[in-house]
Image (cartoon, rainbow, N blue to C red; front, side):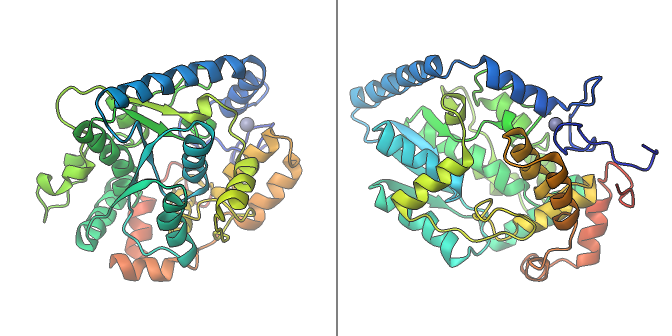
Amino acid sequence: MNKNTLKRCTKCVMPETWSGISFDEDGVCSLCSEFMKKKNKINWKERQKILDKILHKFRRYAKKRNNKYNCIVGYSGGKDTVYTLWAMVRKYKMKPLVVTFDHSFTLSPEAEWNLMEIPKILDCDHLRFSIGNGLRNALCKKTTGIMGDFCWHCHNGVGTFPARISKQWDIPLQIWGEPTAEYQTEGAYKLEDIEEQDEEHYQKVFQAGIKPEMALPKEYAISDLLPMVWPEGNFKLKAIYLGNYEPWDQRKHVEIITKELGWKHNKVEGTYVDWDKVDCPYESVRDWQKFIKRNLGRTTFQASKDVRDGLITRKEALRLVKTLDGKRPKAMDKFINDVGILEEDFNKLTKRHAVIPTNRKE
Ligand SMILES: [Zn+2]
């Protein structure tokens, strides 16, 4: 291996440029090591009992207070939040308030349908919150400049907004789907831990270390960012990931929600599956930013996960990565027009945050 070759895990295809990744002496990455631990150690029956206890406790909490809702499900209409909502209603017989913090970009008709119609099919009440285009665009530009990522407003808001509703509406249980240990290494918990979201966890995982005052565009006041600020003062919140209590099987979930709810999906550019990240029209642009910064795209993640799950070989994964990752997305044309930024400026600002020279190729 010469010095210009990107080092990749010897089991999956995750590269050395992924934030917080480490490799053991056999070249196996920390995500694969986590996966092996999960496979062998987690007692899912035990976890299920813990979940039942938690849900029971919050059903009683709501009943005592005559509250209609006994939990909040943060919802985007993507496969993970749709499955989580389906499971909470149909499998666990909970009464969730569905809360959406919208990224404010125009959705595809399918994604819009998933977002607005599925909660109704499940007979749930749904709160959808969007920020205005001016603030959205100013934040997209500012955070591309300071962190090479235009999605800060969305990633941040999906954590803070439901937390603010939890506090105001006295619904202290929040249910999330996929645990972060499935795909993150830095700032996340390990899979053998049961991950919970509090302010500290939220700052690490959702905010990526960028506080609202740092992201604030100069033409706005901090009060304009209020929905993207963690609620003030002490309040009790139990925010859990369903994937810590039952095995998280993406393909099985897609099958269930398609059959039971008519969930609609269309292929996102740069992926080889047709059900991932359908809830955002600019996911491929974000993947492009990741590629500029870290020389890895969506296929690297999905293919690595599929290798771990035994669905494809490492050789096949490498082939997919070479074919699909690192292509300028077609959605870029619409994105730069929506946000009001020149493509060369967008790329230049993103490149400032590159962790390796971008000409370094395998
Ligand atoms: Zn690996």
